[in-house]
Image (cartoon, rainbow, N blue to C red; front, side, top):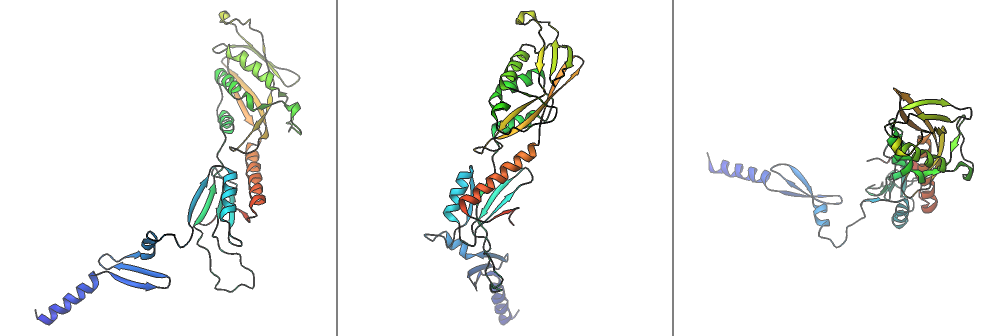
Length: 297
């Protein structure tokens, strides 16, 4: 092979193997010719600057108050937008500080957009009380489980007489916290006993007689009176306000065994109301425009 041809081939191979640096409109990129990978030199240079060129990143806030404080710290007039998702299990408020700027009808067509990569998120952490009662509604409860639930959750139960504008359900008579505590104590000593008789009363309550097989427990087999509902005061989310939540109380007897069931009235609506109230508090405190929905990725 001629020397001139070898030199030409060498020059060609060298041209396509050596890295090449190109100028672009806003900076420089490096192309490694061997694998044709493009490297953004700006992202590499940012690591060696004293300060980044612009703010970016995502802050995850544990409380609404923290989200409000973060929003007031970084909000930008005409650019920052908040998004609140209402549906689905992952309700959240997302604040995009560098969203696309507001555009008027007289704005130029080439108006620049925002990077949308500087954010703060509040994911509405569920309270322990809300989780406890929602779990109790999924499956039937044994006598022991129902008694334990009443004892552990007695602080969530409200006296309907002391709640202003307490919601009412047709055909439901609310039990007071004292009545439910007495019921829980009575059921606690009847774990393992069988139902001897049960009947509905005219006032909406029920009366259940247990067969007395464990006289050493100190009970004489007196009937247990059960009302068919009670009123809860629950915080759907940690740090948020409590809302009145009516609960229906039902039971089923099969083979002389009793299973309890709790049905919360309009729990989905209460959760949605709590989210909407939080969104309203956010906009009042920050004056950032809010959209019900989710931001683009």
